[in-house]
Amino acid sequence: MPRIRKDANRYWSKESKYEIVLKVIKESRSTVDVAKEYDISQSMLSKWVRKYLAEGKESLEPKKKPGNPLCKYSNKKNLSELEKLEYENMKLRVENERLKKGYLVRGDGSVVVLKK
Image (cartoon, rainbow, N blue to C red):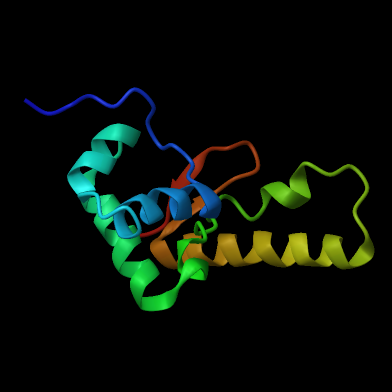
């Protein structure tokens, strides 16, 4: 029966990953024991150890999450001229991609299918 994790999508900083990896490497503990202690999957811990051994501590840096690029502009009240142009450019690129896929989103939020 699989173990149910309490916290989904937990964040692991580079330092905390490093600390956990050192328990496996320096203390010669098994990845299974350390994974149970920290309530993480053994395969994820094994990946951290392999990356650390191959590329060093910098390889444990968490990846940036992509998110919505338009949010950084739409949440600001006062945009500089450059930010206004970048925001408009992004909106046009998104609209262009939607048109390529065959649908158009009107200003009122309604969707018009252009091709099937």
